[in-house]
Image 1 (tube, helix red, strand yellow):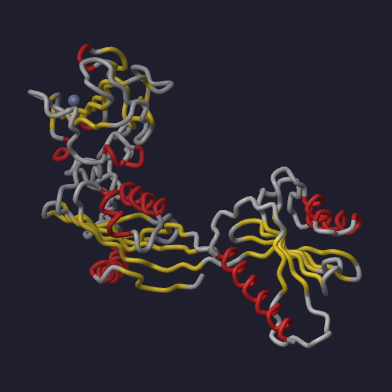
Image 2 (tube, helix red, strand yellow):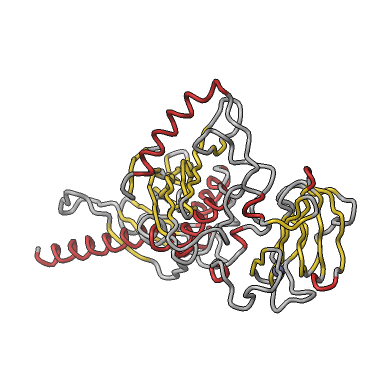
Length: 425
Ligand SMILES: [Zn+2]
């Protein structure tokens, strides 16, 4: 009796360890050894047949049939399982190595009556044997969605601010995604690689999806604000019937404008380059532009719809691209390594289109982009000149609904950082 109890205890511990291992291993590693366990029934009657479960993992290069045979399933049954799996729209030839397959039999030594293939983090195929043969059904494991307020202070750059404020709610890759999402939302208003200064603050209200094995994804950003040396910019996500959601500022104007604030996408600039001042570049005398440190080959984008005026060598600028926009605005991009395909004098380019690649041609000490904005033929500070060009305001009939939405969002943004709402999906 004592030995029996010890055995049951061992099984219970092994089961628990296995369940924990399965639950908290995001990427299931390759694992050739079979793990055997007894499924814990609440009442164990001496002598009664108890269901017997084991977990096998698919080895690299192994087929499903191979695994089943290895686990002692006879040939005919294995063939039948693969047929049923294929009928369930599973490509049995492309299963990932390390995929766990749970097998349950009526008792030890019997052929299994149920197989569960863990196809992915939120997908499994449950196959059951009946008198008429094997059938399979795919199951989706639920994700949960909640909403989180993240708030932080800028000390060196947005990545760093995210590290200290979002780490509690998002793993490393998701924190970067959130930084990129914010940069995208404000890309007509704020140049995240240059406009942020020590002490600036931000808040964001973000949906977060948590998967069955603890995988976390950044969902929609519902609202966000930045206080930049005293001036505030707000973004409220608002949906209008019949069109896709957009972000609006506090006055109900779309954040979308005629120009992007930066010629490099924030997500392309590594955190090492994120701070405003780069030691190598310093400030040149009579420098009439903005320098962006970025690795060679980083795509350069047109900040607005334009016609190419010039794409070629221009002395100290090295390879230089000049674009003419509406309203007499001209942008210049210097020290380029190369121009994008199809970029020639006279060709048309769209806002955001990749037009060239960062390099260090001409008078340059290291890979960087020299960017200039000319208004009426005179170089202007893009931070000032581009700020005045606002987006389309919301229609009068939508203002009431927007203001209500905005009030709710602003109240949440102002709240204490943390999970603010649980919403089951
Ligand atoms: Zn420069």
